[in-house]
Image (cartoon, rainbow, N blue to C red; front, side, top):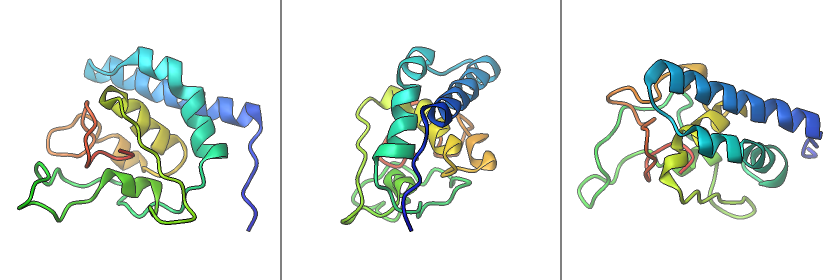
Length: 141
């Protein structure tokens, strides 16, 4: 099956959806980094929709309960990278380095259908993996 090609207008719709979701969280939950979102929404929408070759997500779209900090004794946890699909060839891998972009990345995953509405609404809720600052287990990281 051929990969869908997105128009600039379709990418802009997704970028605006990302911004609106982050703004909603900033207002409702008193947090988020709007500057990061405003400067990266088009870039992330373009990467996810039109540039990266990602397979289907292998993660739970609703999120999972925070399994504890990954360490030598705690190795059985869902990796955040699983939201971007398999990490083997021929698929691309995405390595976001700024952990303060977490909400923007979660909202991007939601806007492109890799996280459900149930999942995104768990952002910054105690006990869930959708934390304010991203880490290895955070969706998309």
